[in-house]
Image 1 (cartoon, one colour):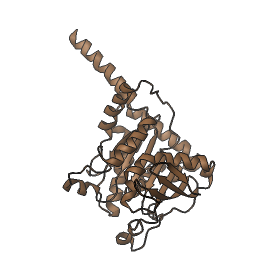
Image 2: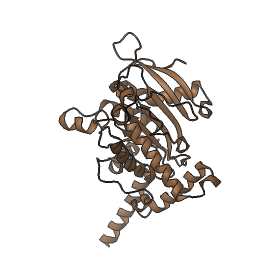
Image 3: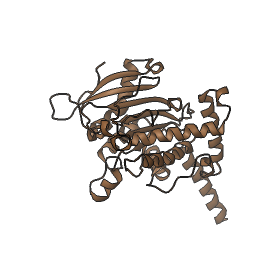
Image 4: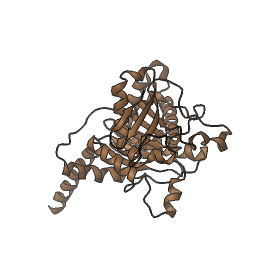
Amino acid sequence: MVMVKRNFFLAISTVVLLVFTTVYPVVILVHGTIAPHKHAVKSKVEWWLPGGEFFENLSQQAYVRGHVVVPFTWSGIPRVADMEQGGIILARIIASYAVNEPVIVVAHSHGGNVFMKALQELHHSFRKQIPALSAITVEKCIEQVLASYNVQRQHSVTSALSLLPAPQPSGFDLLPTARAGILLDAWKENSTFTLQAKKRQFLVDEVYLLGTPINEKNFYPQTELVGQLFNIYSEGDAVQPAGFILAYGTLSDRKFNQRAKIANIELFVREKDKKKLAVVGHSALHSPIVGEWLFHCSEYVNAMKSGWHGAGIDARLALDWEKGPIYCG
C-alpha cells in the first residue's frame, strides 16, 4: 500500500513538473568567444551565467513576461569547426522543446554564429525529413516536424533528437535542470502566472544578436525558421569587423542585407553617471543596461515601425539608464 501511494505521488509530481516546465517561453543565452576559458581562471561570475549582472537583469525582465533564461555554452574557440559543433548541439536542444513552448535566443559575438549554424542544421534536417518541401510552405514543414518531435518526446527525449547527427561531447548546457526549478519556484511565488498554450509558428520566435560578426556567405540566416531577428551592433565595436579575419581573411559586416524579419539596430548607450549617449565597445553589448532593456528594444521598434517585418528595417536606438529605449529613426 505504501509503495502504491509512493508511485502515485511520483506520477502526480512528474505530471506537475512537466506542465510547469514546458508552457513558458524559454530564453536561451549563448556566450561568445573564449567565455568558458575566462570563467575558469577568474573568480568573478561570468555575465552569461546565473549570478552575472547581464544574466540577472535579463532574467528579471524575462520573469515579468513569464519567460525563463537558461545559459548554453560551447567551446568559445573562434574557429569555424567549433561554431559548427556548437551549432549541432544547440540545434538538438532547440528541437527538443515542445510545440507549445516558444523559444527565444539571445547571443553575443560568435555565439550568434553558433546559432546561425544551428539554424542551418535544422533547416537541412527538415529538408531530409520532408523531401517534398517545394510542395508545402516552410511554416507547414516546421509545424509537421515539431509535431513529430513532440510526439516522440513523450516517450524519450533522446529519440526526439534522432533526426539530427549526434554531436561529439563539447561544453555543457544547463537547460534540462535550470528551467524546472526556476519555473516551479516562480509559480509558487506568483499565483497570477497563467499557462500559455500558444503554439510555436517558428522554430525560434525571437532572436537577439549582440555584436555578432556577420558573414552571410558562410553563416546565412535561415529566416524561414524565425519569427523576427534583431541584429544589435555598435560602430564603436572594434572586435566585430575582425571576427572572421583568421578564418576567411576578410572583414565581417556589422549588418545583414536588408530582408524580411531582420531588424539591423545601431545601438547607443548612456550609462549611469555619463552625460551623453555614446557608441560602445564589444563587451559593453552584454553590459547590465543592455540586459535590463533588451526586450524593451524589440517592443519599441515594433511599436514605432509596425509592419516592418515584410521588408526588414535598419534603425537606430539609444538606451538611457534613466529613460530606457529612445528611438532615433
